[in-house]
Length: 273
Image (cartoon, rainbow, N blue to C red; front, side, top):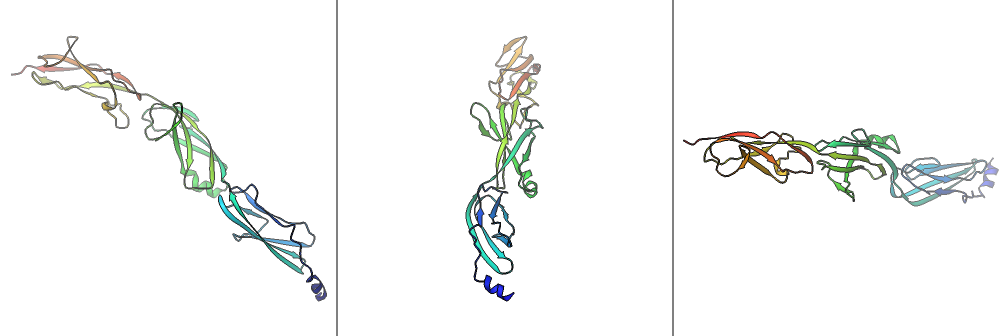
């Protein structure tokens, strides 16, 4: 009745029991409004992003302003509005990532072979993030020689590595990574000597080659180069008389290759006319 409206108009709603809760703010988590349990009261909460409800989902990490307008209504007679606002530093959500190499958490491969790195992540805040970001993981390789050293992954030297994950294109997650263990082993390399037949008076020009090098490397990437020419089992040098000779390589060293040698190469020095 009109008389009731005039009476209720003399009163105000006590909003002291209403509050904004932003504790433990994390991406994907929620802010909330504390509402008193008054009988015959209804409350409507409108957040600064336009959403309604007693909870607000943090849509991004970082510093931001969170605000809510609460409309309190007693029956159909009294309506009060009160706004709340807070500056909130929203933490990044933790994403647990397990790295595997060649489908294993620990494995080995041969120098010159590219590792196949995979990532399994748990803790996505929503399906949209997973769809947008799961293909953006990248591997970081740490060479383990006392103090782990970050190295490029396109040409891994022989040794042990820990393989971690990084996730680009986002600011809302911090990664908790279980790395893969990787051991790169020496590649077998067989060296052979190539030398052309020649005429007496010419200089022998032996060349050491192999079909087993990785990454486009060649003999110049090895150390301690030695090629010896033999005649009748004796090492010879200088101007070679006419006859049959062999040439063989020895003494080559490399961190990344296990070196073997092909049989000595035979060549001939013809008589000069």
